[in-house]
Amino acid sequence: MKLKEILANIDVKNEYSDKEVINVTSDSRLVEEGFLYVCIKGASFDGHSVAEKMLEKGAAAVVCERDLGLENQIIVDDTRAVYSPICANFFGNPANSLKLIGLTGTNGKTTTTFIIKQILENLGKKVGLIGTVQNMVGSEIYPAHYTTPDPYELQSLFRKMVDAGCEYCVMEVSSQALAQGRVAGIHFELAAFTNLTQDHLDYHKTWENYFGSKRILFENCDIAITNIDDKNGLRIVEGLPCKVKTYSVDNNNSDFTARNVCFSSDGVKYELVTDRIGRVQCPIPGRFSVYNSLCAVSVAIALGFDFEDVLRAVAKCSGVKGRIEVVPTETDYTVIIDYAHSPDGLENIISSLREISKGRIVTLFGCGGDRDRTKRPLMGEIAARLSDFCVVTSDNPRSEKPADIINDILEGMKNTKTPYKVIENRKEAIEWALENARENDIILLAGKGHETYQILNDGTIHFDEREVVSEYFNK
Image 1 (cartoon, rainbow, N blue to C red):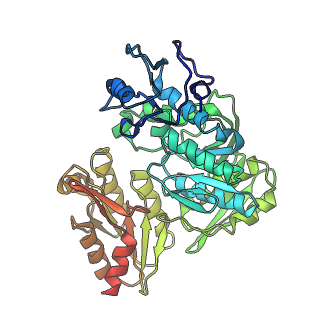
Image 2 (cartoon, one colour):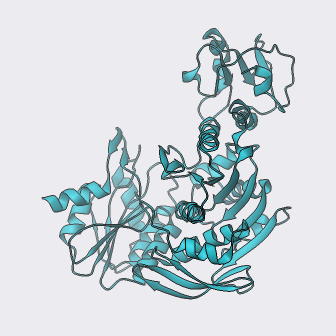
Image 3 (tube, rainbow, N blue to C red):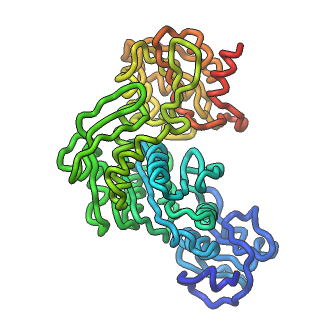
């Protein structure tokens, strides 16, 4: 592809020679002869520092934010901002041929995107999905390294979807991706907001930065679907030109309202009240399944699908790996794996299980290292207050000592009477919880969810909680 095609509609500050480009990257380790290298300044590495070396390796040109005195330089105002449209141009702007649905919020994104995908597929559409657990092109599965991929991988996935005949793409859009411009230049037919609670402050530093990043999504959509039971639900779309539709369980003034909610171990049921009334049955248990399914149904109806068809479609949906996932065991107690790793997420899952439990709720959890320390005692307090017993263990400690993280968690449990046990090794902690389970207990393994690894100080190891449970019973 010619350089001028790749730089189409990008404001370039200098003259340059057109030439053939075989690929695009912002990763200096991947540069080969004929590549276009985009210099991006990150937290610990500035791509500008190796621009000259990239040309020596054979790069066709480098995109930079200042005059580096190099022959084949392309100067722009903001390399991070132009990287996404550069990648889009390189792959032929595939997003223009897709109807994009973006979801953002602290909790509920993954399950809701899966429900939306299944609803649309049950309505006869071919759908792509991009998110935390996995990326999908129709039924084909691709590994997910980030909730929202970097611009090159994202545009590559869009290209695969278009080539495979997908009409829709449903994607989780993280606050970090929005802040880093990974979806810059991408327009969404519809964007949805789930909720906003404390998370990722290790990256964003302040609540306003976190909120502001989320709001970017709604600056680039035609229709916004927002949860007005969350105090930020209206604020996140305030003053924006998009068409706004609201959903709620508690507010009768919303456009889509869930009333007369019924909970059971095999799902939730409620009346959906909009300009007409219908009965929703979602086969995924838990209070937040009401919000997740309500958001998904609201999205489908707002996209123009028939009301009754949507209700029939959601009733056929299934669960999501790592989200209230029941692990098969031949026991008189239940083992559930859930990704809850924030204070709000942990409170939601335990509260939801409380509504269906017949015995104790035993919560096994930890907190990630090198992440927001302030949420550790909060999670300790929540787990102790809502559970009957807690097992405090390690999550992904990364470079921190697991014992230090656990001590932070225990600070929040000091004033509670709930019994707990500390077992630093997560595998041993799970085995202890299973060994000491009682009839009708729910053993909640919280924090890892879909993950099949554990990040330790000396590297990443394979760790799948389903396998740990299976191995325990095989013994």
